[in-house]
Image (cartoon, rainbow, N blue to C red):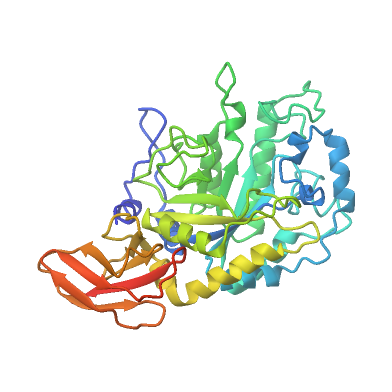
Length: 441
């Protein structure tokens, strides 16, 4: 696979936003971490903070035009008594996920971990008084899952953050804007995230907040990334900036869109990466943070199809859940995790460690194949094309077996020249993902 071969090259060149020479050379440990990240293919995204108390989504401070000091009072009542990190980790593991990305600090400025850089955090500002991230870190470690951190580089609460296009009604005075001071604050927090937990990746957000400035804003991202890699070279760095990668980044992310698509308007100018691992983040319903009014969840089958489609495009899926204020995952989310897990138990080999298959996307579905190569590839049938499915094969290719991956039952085949005809069972359900394993001799 093109992306796999590229990320293993020690001389890999990152796509930049200019024609300037690139100086970032990822360490061997970083390249290995990229390989592991790609092989995992499926991650869980968690948007959790004091905004869950309002149950209006993670942007409620901005969208509700609330005063930041009034909004912050939610911290004094934040007590996730039903939070059980072990139960969370087991649910994610059983679903077939390989890693978890959780919000360490969102745009509202509240830190969900034990930080000395600010008292506005879950340990010091809430009656709960415990580090939920520490518990999750330990629980994930026991289940063999990796921990990634979402971290907002914009802040609607702090006075030293230079005010951008969002959070303008939060009540900040704007008379102490000092990015150098704020930059050092971020460095202090990021160092804590890298040294206090088993952190595998950092997922940044908020770069777009200054996209409409008359004078281009210098976030000093390459300097920030150099600092991160100086502490932990293997830590993967990504940024949800909706643009081409910046020097020092290790993976590319696409918000609510598959690589090369732009249905949301977020990905204008973003291209399909041929040098860096890719990840698509998507919600189960329409919201990132918990929203009491948003119960419009995608079906389990839709999510499974999305996962398979991502893999067929050399892309990971980061599937979001917004935990409730009491520390529980919504029942609708747990139901879908269970359904995905049941499918993954019998079809997971067509996802884990896989990338694009030899058959391009068809009306009936997609194909995947092991990144390491081999003689087997997989057909993901989302919609039955009829009694027979027809795919191209090399003329000299001899087929050893064609089976339903879920139960190993053999499917009747006929090879004519460079075409392979596979007879499908009559009971294939449209809207699901029926996986066929094709193995050559």
